[in-house]
Length: 227
Image (cartoon, rainbow, N blue to C red; front, side, top):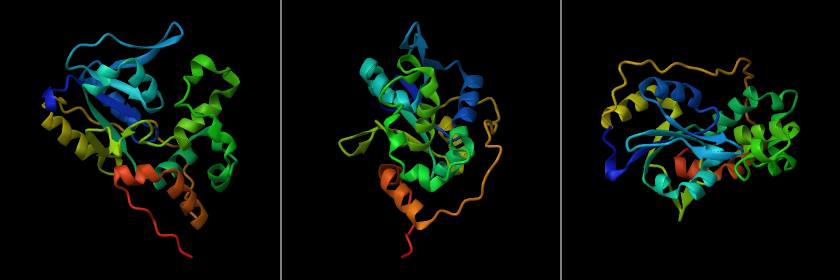
């Protein structure tokens, strides 16, 4: 592996409904990724060596930065991004918490915002009956850029577009001199029931406001609101 700028590790930050499950499966067939996982009531990173691939879930970024700042700063960081409009619809269709709820109500309701999975490791510190609320937050409300912006700069070295996932992954790994051994990137964790949704002006407005930084730092265009 040839990492630029003397980086020591490859850090993949996994976000919901951006092809992450497929990409993790792909990485596990190439190497043996290291995880930031729960061990005896706390988050611990597997023992690592230079050149290792690390997988970090997006709602654990802040905890990881605090505990392993040196590793975070010395990692070549990659993120798979997705158009915020498409991501919201995908999460809405996918997560069981959204069943029988209107999209507009979920976007407007501020009650669910308090279950911020990036502020607390909920499976360690929150009673189990509330886990689904935190899980839904991480899928639906959590920004792709959460805890990844400092001084108006995105702390990601390579953004891979979900919209061009296969091509960009293979191109990146070629540049990094990582042998993919012709491994296929499979489409896993598919949403079974997909509702065709045409976003209303109010829904567009709410998405634009909440996910402003995702549009800005991941270079997605805002849709025009027709008045």
